[in-house]
Image (cartoon, rainbow, N blue to C red; front, side, top):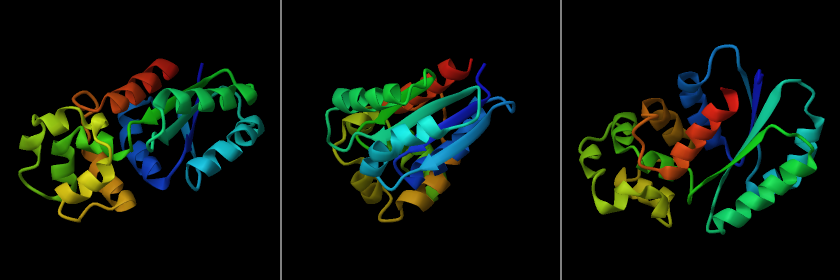
Length: 185
């Protein structure tokens, strides 16, 4: 049984998101740890050593990285290969398509509440926001939508507590949530 979840993250804003949503997903018996790297290259460079060096038993690892214009399947295959090199059987790799901000654009009600901007939620059913994972630059879109208020870390901290785990339009967010549930249940 998994007692420890270790998140290996490309950026600090991902930690802010997870800190807000994990209490809604996990039982209190599971302890969460975060390893935040200085970008995707640092994550990939240090991933194997960090996983190999982990000492706590009953641990599972979740790697979350932005797609950032790369081929999603290749990025996932590369990260999966690195996890296999670390010889840790309990791991999950998830890719935010194209960026973490797609998760937020998948729940404009959360953006509206977190950023204190009215009128955003009604845009959720527009073609653009029904499938936010297709947007090529979701961070830029979120800045535009919030009239410059959104910044990665503070925006994540503000929006994430309001995210609806069941009603998000981002398929990559839903895959992350489903993967975490499957790993710990």
